[in-house]
Image (tube, rainbow, N blue to C red):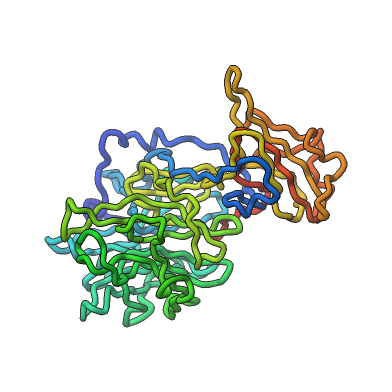
Length: 479
């Protein structure tokens, strides 16, 4: 379908005028200095990341923080209405000039009952993660009983774009139907099949896994279960997750070796009414992180859709089997909706668009290893890069009697022996909070050991340590 600049009529359908608090968002969007890309070497999330620990370590995660509003787009028709980006479908692609192409989908009710939708794919650009420019409509839905859930991903670093979306099925007992559309250039879209690629239920998260060259969905499905309170599903089934993968977006394999009945289900540590509603995975250094949306029916809304409980950060080594180390944290913070996109990496931050706002965290600061009093641990071995090591850590200054925080780093060889000249007393960090704190030992940066297998022994107090990186290619390029 030929694309066109969004007309005034279409803008009326897919745009709303922001409330007064965001009318000046474009002018107030934070000006950020361009940061050079970094390459993560290690992230510190879980007990296995701390070898030979001494003292009492804590493993904490951070919720999303509100960073600003999405500002006024430019290059629009004369009415200059402000676009509210979709919170349910968004894909960003890094560009050589440092901007990102944005692909998203808006949904509008097509029936009075609000159960069937029309959708439109658009294309735009963001130069900084806060402004949206050059918006074009590129595709409108064909006829069908479309639902509101959808997702987008790129196949490989330079491959085609894929758009996955749901419709009702006939007969209804098959579950909802997942359809796939594709585009080589992001402008001309076409359906890839005359039939659904699979049937299930419509809440899901999608990613392209660069490490295994396949699409991966974390898909809500139903499990027979007698639950304490009824909702729109009744009282005899609950929402749980399944994991599916596909090399081409058309042929999908359901992974059945991940738990009871091949499903990701609540466990004995969970409330009896807990359900898993959806999960959005993404790459995170050498692992995967996902935001999982949790749900529970409520006795205040019998036989109706209940409220959500909040979200958790989950972590995985393979994106198939997931661990839940931070159950007490509401990962979404005060955000009105869960994450439904992979992060945009901009100038030392991980950014997510949720409705008309920008949420995020500093780069690689989802979780950390900390200690209130004196503690130490060793990292796993890594190959020393040819550029200086950068520590991601928060080492507060304190006040009065409470100026206690420090980090000391010791560099060790492959045998675990301290390298002369790189003892802990030569690398002391205090009153520092940054994602790229240089590690130096009396002015030396260890780059003369480039290519050697080394490790760090970290000694610290009243600090949180998130990761280790070096200057290098952006880890999110092509994602």
